[in-house]
Amino acid sequence: MRLNNRLASASVSVSQVQDVYNNIEKSLMVSLKRTEMSCLQVISLLCN
Image (tube, rainbow, N blue to C red; front, side):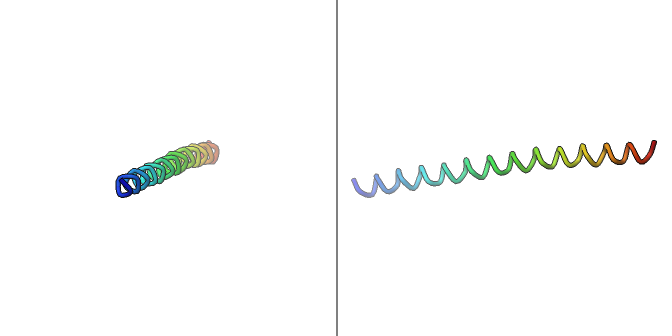
């Protein structure tokens, strides 16, 4: 019984870590897209 509880707890912990990682990854991708768009805008302004 204790082993099952520990396994269940470990499983929840791994799931939480994966959720945090996925959220960080999404945030970084959004930031990267914004930076990319900003760079394109600057290049566009410089070229015109």
